[in-house]
Image (cartoon, rainbow, N blue to C red; front, side):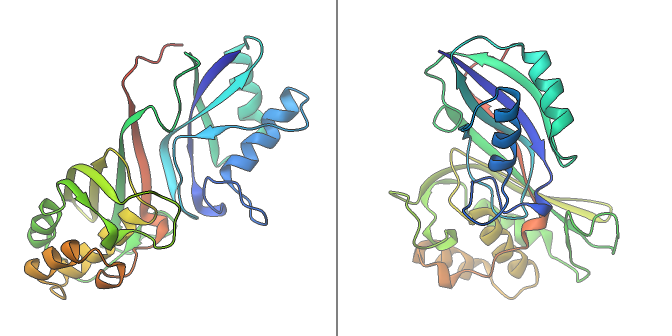
Amino acid sequence: MKRYFFKISYDGTSYFGWQKQPKQISIQETIEKDLSKIHSLKEMSIVGCGRTDAGVHAKEYYFHWECEKAINKSEIKYKLNKMLPRDICIQNIYEVSIDVHARFSAKERSYEYLINTSKNPFTANHSWYIHQKLDLDKMNAAASLLIGTKDFSSFAKIHTDVNNHMCQLNYAKWVQKGNQITFEIRANRFLRNMVRAIVGTCVDVGFNKIQLDEFKRIIESKERQQASGSAPAKGLYLSKVTYDLELKN
């Protein structure tokens, strides 16, 4: 049995997230359908490195797939890119050990969230437009309170199937360049809706609706209703997935 890692990127605007859904179109289902056509299989199952919500994008995403025989990676990449819609791209394919898992072998994940402070029709579907002044110093002070191993229940979607809400958050910072504000956040794992909830709450800090002592209490409360609403999905990008192995062509 052979196992392959597929490195891909996608614009999530037209999809109901990565995960296959019974009545909605997903990234996973779209890829499985075309991959099954290439190999003349009725059923195809691929395993993603994580879940992205409806409308969320990925600059770098990995899934793994198993097959009985070795494949021609260049040929599969070419054929799949030709068949897939323009908003999904296969960047590369790697052969890995059978015990390497796209989800469970990942050591760290990085997300970016984009805010534009000037109206721009070309970024309307890929960033959150906020014309009001934001206090980035306060937002970064709030972000610094997130660093460390903590229970992030306050920013997690409730009634999910995870065993716990503990995450090791390694980095969180807001940076502005011109009309674009970028939030970069890195952790060993993320809970469903976690980044968007953090962004929404930090933005309220930037509007001075929430003070830093309140932000700290929100974290400690472990109650989702204490935090702000989620930021729009269109501004969120999975930007990097880190593995403790060297991926070679």
